[in-house]
Length: 559
Image 1: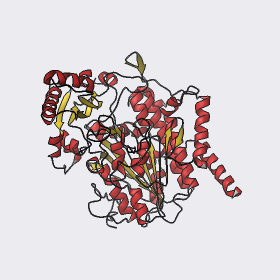
Image 2: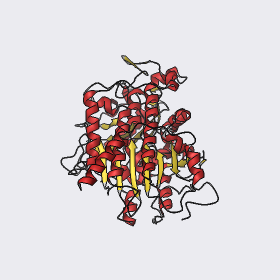
Image 3: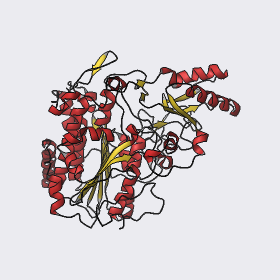
Image 4: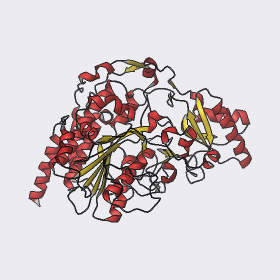
């Protein structure tokens, strides 16, 4: 046992100390030419989600990638994948990736929602919490998959063969839960300066090693990161409130955990943990195919804090690319037959201050009149109706808005009508749709890029969780009335394609490369992987369809 533990420690140390190695541009073609893709299922599925990684960001940086993305773009590329729903947030987006089911059916309609007729009333419910646990709250949740109404691919794999391991890592608990599901063999996320897990789970040697390395970095601080030559054009200060953004270098002040998290170092630590757990658990070497879900959150953190088009995002994308390459090279060295799928939970919109300078002056911040607090005042003045507590409540000046349940049915009807009238009178509002209108709509079919705003919204609607009125802002109206530099200056969550459209990339050694620009959906990922694995699932399990990855006369969906 001592020899095994010593060997594991050495393996972990080498993995954590490994430099970010770049792939060569010829690597994907060489790999594909050497050996055709095996007919048998891969031994490991690596499902990578890059949080807030839009198809636009992928296209912007694609020509500059030199690491892991080079391998992936030498596989099967769908540059126009769609998170087809309107509520393009972290939890709903991750919930589609490995369930193959839209939020309208899987239950994850937003990061937080309200159930006014339930025990919490006008208090929010976090998507990845067990709200029935008295110790749980949205800010400090008892993390659980309770609110996810369907199984994930990892659960289906374990159901078909209990020897399959279902492992998920991320900086975000909700990403772990939504990709892993209800039956996770190992699930780890970042909280307060270290990776943690479900209640009662002790850190393993792999987790301890990664946490120790991160803690040492945070304690000591770190120098600013270099900016690649090809990022120079993006290195320009943009005034935002009382400060400027666009020239950051991610210098880490000693003891500043938040600066560690909002930087490429967070993704590097997550990849370190994925590598450590893969080694510790011998993923891809067991009696059945394993699943390793890796959600990388730094693109989202940095996108919110600095926008998606400055030097900060450029540096981050360069580092992310190298970290992906490091993960793939490690699995290569282990001799594992693995299949990678990479996509995203949603896209993102740059901060309006920079868009205004870059030929889109229509970009603006939402007016404070659209916040739930101010809407409550306006509707109360219009109707003469007031209640104890909020009359209208919700999370932001966009998305689901709820009306107090302390009203009589007649009052509620009057308040909803006044709320819709108020919203539609705003020049920043594209539409205001009632729950009754959404419930009466059939689920959309056909191509997601061609759906109107209401059809997109229908896929985010679920009775009992969705609001009484859905507020849809105009294109490029950012639902952050006042920027908070270093935290929130830009965001996502809209029904527009800059938030809905994401890349979907598949790679396996020997897989014939091709690129298909026609639109597909993120709910197509799970049925595609299920077919590759030969999983038998009941009709109607998935909302998506299987994508044939053969690229020739064969058909990976015909197994």
